Length: 220
Image (cartoon, rainbow, N blue to C red; front, side, top):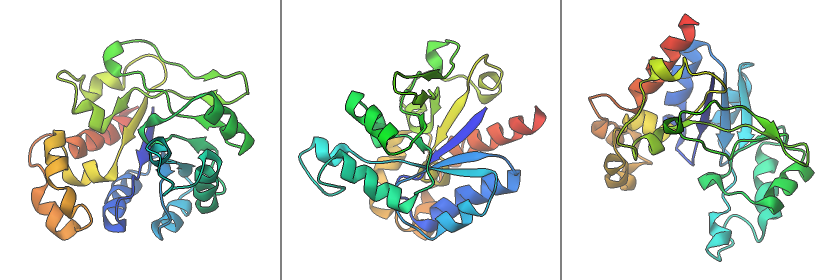
């Protein structure tokens, strides 16, 4: 079982909230980085944490150059922040043959862009691509689980055969998101944790699922 975190431009206080949950549990996690922030030093200081990159190619797809003039520049900019990265998951899972080869050129070893939803109920395993890049698929993502009408409980997912990679986002953990309407209607205050916490869901949401997963990991 592997826990991964896409930090997705969350403000430091919200990222730190997730860090504390995982640090207190003393478990491993891979953090896919989107931007430069002081909290990266804290993540680096934990030997159970790994930093990967989470490049955003969406601007290029829309004809914009905010993140870089081309795909290579997008990668180079994020690798300047995380030069030690060996893993990559693109924002929105953007991928193609050109990018997969570019990842290898940039000395990345693990590609985590392939999502096979747990609802497919198939045994998942990593595989090696033609260029020796190792593809590590994942089967659960917090926001995508909000889109499905039926989701398996965590205690069943951790018992699945095969590779089990979970993907969380600090903003959804902080909000305890139970549906994407909560996320969308609070967008304007996502950078204001003191105000945002007033909108944290009081029922069963993403935060509860992470805590359940942490507790289940301790039982193994």
